[in-house]
Amino acid sequence: MNILVTGGAGYIGSHTCVALLKQGHSVIIADNLSNSKSETVMKIMDIANKEVTFYEIDVTDAEAIDSIFRNYKIDGVIHFAGLKAVGESVDIPLNYYYNNIVSTMVLAKACQKYNVNRFVFSSSATVYGDNKVPFVETMDLLPTTNPYGETKAMSERILTDIAKANPEFSVALLRYFNPVGAHESGLIGEVPNGIPNNLMPYVTKVAKGKLEKLRVFGNDYPTIDGTGVRDYIHVLDLAEGHVAALDNLKIGAHVYNLGTGQGTSVLELVKAFEEANGTEVPYEILERRPGDIASCYADASKAKRELCWTAKRDIISMCRDAWHFEKNYKE
Ligand code: NAD
Ligand code: UDP
Image (cartoon, rainbow, N blue to C red; front, side):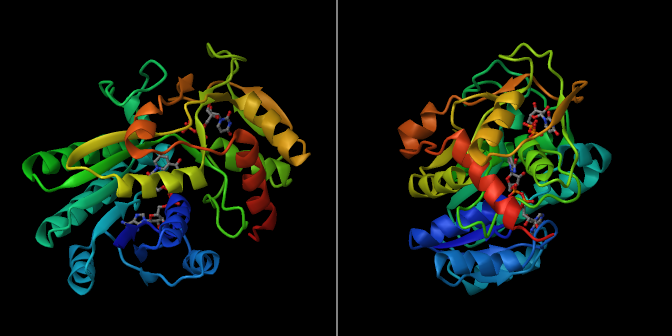
């Protein structure tokens, strides 16, 4: 199939493009490179040993998107493009609402016009808010504490309504847990802008000596050791989850958690990282970070049942591959 991958030069998108190419799909990437580099597209082709078509365009640009649909027979869309920094979304909400919602609507309109009925959307476990763990797809969504989360919940609603109105439209709403790790080649991985907000990229920078020590945000949560618990998932498993979602699309809107179902605390992750890589990660305990919840992990049984997909890689391989990428990465 010809798959339009928006945000395909980004972290999760690039790994998914490799997985799609491996499965024999053709890939057209639309990315404005606001948080990625064109070299990544070359690296995708190197790893997969296949060509991809790349358009440096903004997905909110309806005319540019229309021209892609006009020029190619698009069979399906995977929509990764979006802004994703939770803290930044509080400071510049309009950019987040505009970019993340308008891009979804522009793509949905093009799909309607060109009768493209396969759509996969990058949502996030953040839409569950502070529900009780494990998070199950049937739970009522709770308000998130930030505009980023709201853009995901709204995009889910928009796509669900479109599926209700169009009996031929199929959309998978994929709620990711915490993607980490990198391709085993070390060629593609996560490259955060500036000082990382997320745990794994912060840990790799500490291990590399670029940052002095990890700041552990709170050790008084009701968790195994008091530090926050998350469901870390290897980005390669996540990428394969997208191929499975595309292969198993059915009419209507269907929500799937893409996680391992396993919770790992901050200190457990630090220990796994040290064990996997034989490096030290010095840390200090600080106050809780505002907006954080104690625990977030998936009930991953629906994706297993309906998509025949489960995450296979463990926390040690996530830490090993994240470090392998960071070590090789030239700033
Ligand atoms: P990323 O920033 O690495 O990739 C997003 C890509 O989209 C970037 O290459 C960026 O240049 C591009 N982009 C952004 N706005 C665009 C626009 N208007 N037009 C064209 N391109 C645009 O992020 P990622 O981690 O790969 O995340 C991919 C998707 O998954 C995002 O929608 C994100 O919100 C969602 N998600 C990410 C995580 C995570 O922890 N990484 C968790 C849950 C959900
Ligand atoms: N965390 C931390 N120090 C950091 C970054 C994150 O202690 O420098 C903790 C954070 O409080 C949370 C966990 O690590 O408990 C995962 O945070 P991340 O930002 O990676 O993901 P999210 O909170 O968005 O799920």
